[in-house]
Length: 100
Image 1 (tube, rainbow, N blue to C red):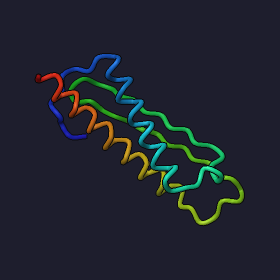
Image 2: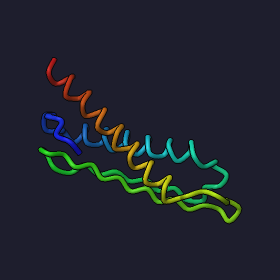
Image 3: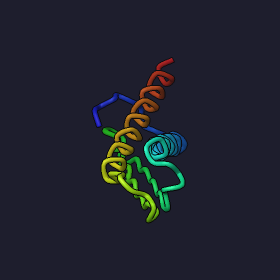
């Protein structure tokens, strides 16, 4: 993740960033694979460090036996990217709020 120049995050802000990243990753998966084909969807996000901040997102998808033609790894990788983009955007917004 690039250096965003944000102030040190509070524990509440870390929770917000994790929640936003997880929700965005889940939304991405749901937009690519119908819910009826998803048997398991586990998404976790962690924020570590102060400067630089490291965001790690793990997406684990299990499909039903009826699900055919989905590239699960590609969807999971793209979901991680979307989650990280959402986390970065939120941290930029935090930076703007801290400067006012």
